[in-house]
Image (cartoon, rainbow, N blue to C red; front, side, top):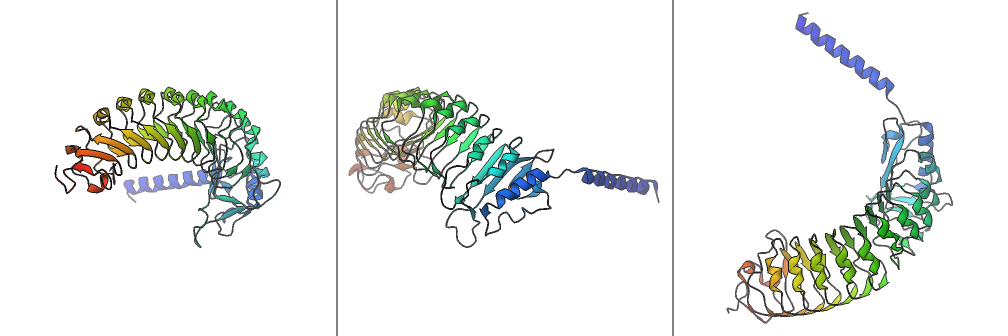
Length: 397
């Protein structure tokens, strides 16, 4: 054997020994953690075998949806079944209607950071289990589309380390409790697609790290509360509710706001000119309301704006020329209004990649189409606007 061969053999032997030692010292999850998870599994109907590898005598750190830390303690439970009605190949989990659902997870309290149960169907409908609100080290809680009912309890305030709370797609009977104000680390708050009739507590304004507040498609009525102006969010989505009255000027105080979605409510009055003070705004959607009056010229102050949607309202008057000076506004939907006059010559170009980036249909616009829009399809302007002329329309000016 040559010296080179001897060196290679020795190196290989050293690696094998190292791997053997490492493997023998590799930690497996504790019996307590494993038994807690198995007890939780027994409270689920798993006909599709999503959790088939959750078995006694195996390392729970290797199970589907489980993640452990270096000490082999469970830090994450992330279980996502496929949606309802996904067909015969879907993965389904059904939570049995027991008074102590999830109680065994209390064993994991010292280390558990993430709890996500997505599309886990609650069989006979019950509130969020009280045990979940004792997991005080959680920084991520996701209970999306589980169909929990009842109110969100004040015990939510126990989860003081929470950074993201996503409880979309349930059937709650109320909004946020006052105790929400205790969650000083919270960054993301999502409660869309519930049946909540109220926004809940103004204590949300105490959450100075909150960046996203998503309350779409609930059943909130009445005016937009003034306390919304005290939020520090970059994303505010209140679409698909039944808010009425004017767009509150208090929203103009949201100087960090980048994404505002108010579509599909019953808002009336005009778009407030002070919206131009929200300098970071890049997405503004006020479509499908009952807004009236002209578009404010102050929209031209929103130099970051890329998308503006005000379709299906009762907006009148001319198009402000100032909007055409916005350097990144490539997507505009203002169809089904009563806008009159000419399209200013500085409008365009549109987004060359987006499908139907411009929709001016069913208004009362007239005059030539500006050069920046002449590469569009005529469906961007028709039906409606009988007074428009020039390319891409067939009638010359």
